[in-house]
Amino acid sequence: MALYEIITRFEPIHLSTQVEATTDENLREYLAGQTAMWARMQRNGGRCISVVDCSISTKITAVQRRIYADWINASGDLLDGCLVGAAFIMPSIVVRGALTAVFWVARLSAPHTVHSTLEGGLNWALDLARREGLPLSVALEREGVDAFRRLREASA
Image 1 (tube, helix red, strand yellow):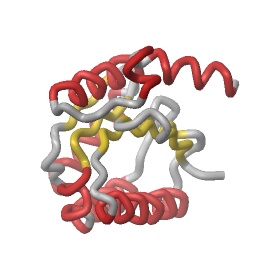
Image 2 (image 1 turned 60 degrees about the vertical axis):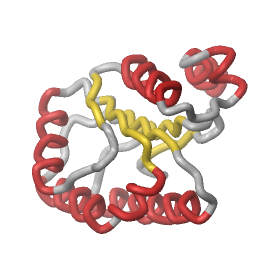
Image 3 (image 1 turned 90 degrees about the horizontal axis):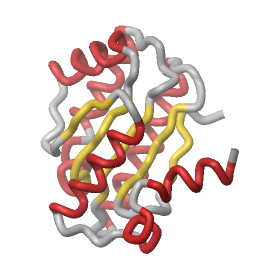
Image 4 (image 1 turned 45 degrees about the vertical axis):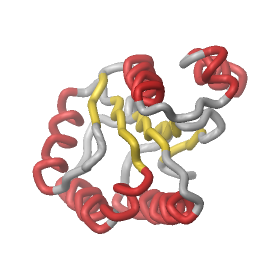
């Protein structure tokens, strides 16, 4: 199973929802997939806002923090060209602290924020998309963040 389930059908917001506990192996696999996705997006001139829902995560090890920080640093050119912003969903104060540690050694040039709820992160992302003048999918234009809720309920 993949570490995250990724929904890209509501452009320009990409929602990655963690679906299993983080291991070194699945984190590396996820980041390799992210590298390929960002490279495709850069080739196609795409831009998006990433919402990463880590609601099920209760811990991240020092090794995993280093893996993630190294990936951010190595992927800076890809992210700078495509990433408009990032919202991280982390109800756990422990996991939020781990993310803070990652950003001590790795910098995202795009605006980024941490929220305790998915709705808060999605609303932030939708507001950023509108401020940046990014074209919205028909569903996002019509339903706002409820489009994500509707899709998740339909697939449950």
